[in-house]
Length: 158
Image (cartoon, rainbow, N blue to C red; front, side, top):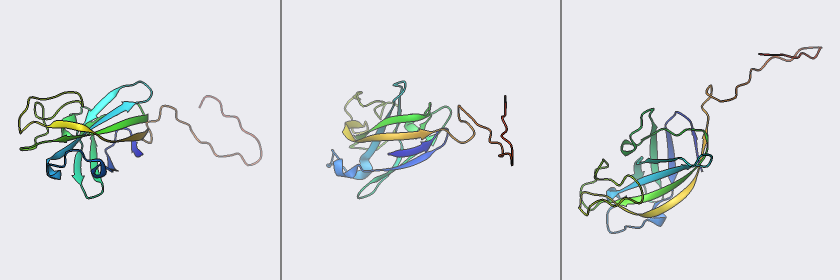
């Protein structure tokens, strides 16, 4: 499970190498397309995170941006709550360029065959993202009052 806060950048360490699909290319030729699905409203957000592949796991960085560009590891996840995520392996034979027309925008889009175009190999892992509201931006906010010493106090309208 990934833990994150709304309107902030976050990191995730996910197990991807044990389920790697395309073993014919080096790990430097692999990128990951992440699909986030909101449990409440079903909205979908895609992102290519900045990633570093290690022997046992992949470290991913997701950058918050109010006007996101998912090719540049930028995303805006709202509302807070549970999001399911699916991680898709995308591999290149030639130079890796994560950009429009060289990296698939979704897991179902197939780009024209070329060494410089990425190919979605399949899903390598999935899980849950618990997205919590950032402190001070909660939808419901409470004001805490000190407890009276001897009598019960009822606060109204504050």
